[in-house]
Amino acid sequence: MLERDNVAKGRIAGSLQVDMTYLNSRLDVDKNFDIIYRVIHIGGKEACMYLIDGFCKDDLVQKLLQYFMDLTPDKMPEDMHALSKQFTPYVEVDIEDKWDVLIQSLLSGMFILLLEGYKKALLIDSRTYPSRGVEEPEKDKTLRGSKDGFVETLVSNTALIRRRIRSTDLHMEMMSAGESSRTDIALCYMKKRVSQDFLQEIREKIRNIKADSLTMNQESLAECLYQRKWYNPFPKFKYTERPDAAAAQVLEGNIVILVDNSPSAMILPTTIFDVIEEADDYYFPPVTGTYLRITRFLITLLTYLVTPTFLLLINNDKWIPESFSFIMLKEEPNLPLIWQFLVLELAIDGLKLAAINTPNMLSTPLSVMAALVLGEFSVNSGWFSSEVMLYMAFVAIANYTQSNYELGYALKFLRIITLLLTQWFNVWGYVGGILLSVLSVCCNRTVSRKSYIYPLIPFDWKALKNRLIRRRLPGAVQAGGAETDRRG
Image (cartoon, rainbow, N blue to C red; front, side, top):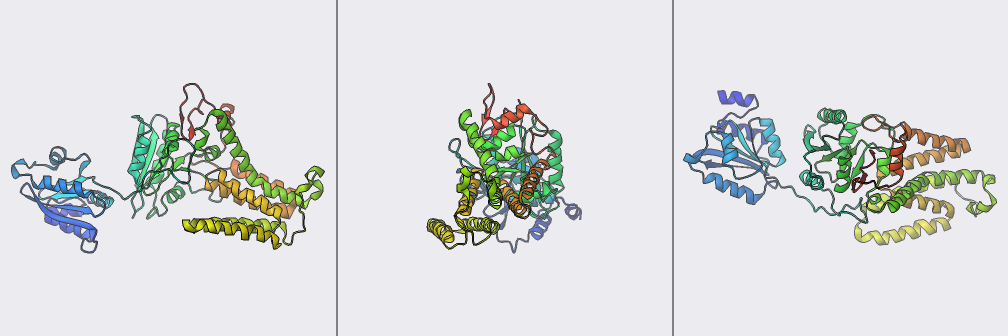
């Protein structure tokens, strides 16, 4: 009767039969083929092991079972604590008596051992998840620097950061979210450098997540952490698949969030300058890095301004100087320019989606076909003007000068709005569109509710100079992907 009362309270009863009955009922082992349990004898006592097929290392489990089954009654310890610390030949061993913790650990891949007469269970972390190699990510490539990248396994990702930061100040704090998924989340930070108030705020937000599961991993977590101003398209988080970039941000005092099953890291708080930065800025000498940074910044502005400016000048051709008359349309368009731009904006996204879903063996011939049919023939047929095709081709290609997709689409949305305002209200619409874009950036806030355009607002000339110019200060740490000397 006492054993059943313990089970009702959510704890191990100490009677193997009662515990097995409860656990088998909770796990529905008769229907779940991948949940394996086996009754064995250890030191003259009856015991039962539980594991998830495919999560545990078979060789390790076999050796542990052989060791336990060879224990004789005279060597059997009286309590589970002694069994875990002195008689279990493995490193990652723990004991637990709460059923909720045991079941969650089992479903995470741990090995569970129940023994007759013991009111605690043995937890052995023998997990091994299917994973790919840590090759360089396709999205965050660099010409120099390390060629490893994050994978879908959380422990592997934390090890890649630990390898770069060998300090006792580095903390890897484990949390979980999702009522059903119980997705593992790791907070990576330097204890003496991070803002403790902001860190506590992030902890509380993760603990208070009421979602059933983080279906889309990091995106689901991001939407739970930042729920205000969803209509502002500029990114509130920076994502990276490079361990060197993540380690540099940790050293800078930021928080890096790793989510299990996601091969990238979330960096917060993030400003617009953080989003534009790339690792190549720091893998080259200061002069080259500064040139790359300024070039990327100018091209980002051009991707937003070039098509609305062209539309404004064509609608007001008397403003075009004689020396720039070559930008005028050579032929009268059959389709209004605003419709050409809007259709091509949609067509470019269609080509991107087609490229994502095209098998690799067909990507080259389909690319050639798209260039010929949608490029040359669309101009010859009269649907589009060659000048419009030229500027939209520049915009499509220039978007890839920066790797942040969210920033690219934020500029795209604002570019479309500015095009429409320019068409409807001429120069006032053009100016209004630019003002709207500036306000969208200036009125934005980071996750920590700080200025999104710091060090412009509040103004800090020294920090701004470090943002614009890639400098190397004596004794400064230059590490792959973030400027650790910006604090001055």
